[in-house]
Length: 86
Image (cartoon, rainbow, N blue to C red):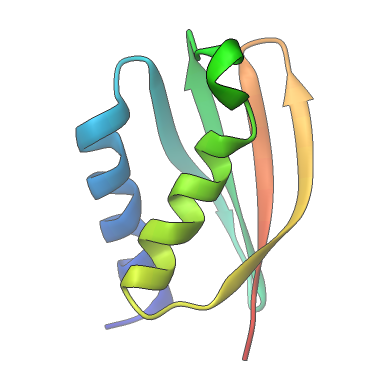
């Protein structure tokens, strides 16, 4: 399974349980990093940043070790850059 396949599978699983409140979508994939857009109504009182950690857990459950590199807040949510750990 390629890294792209793992990411797409994790996002699919993530969205199954969190949409429509929050929906993740892959916006960029490079050699060592990828970006995911999180959009939706969110539950800010539940912990805005917890949503990003939840996707990290989904990815790690599928065997992809990553870390969050950057979180760019945008009006409709956030774009999060993840780095693949080798």
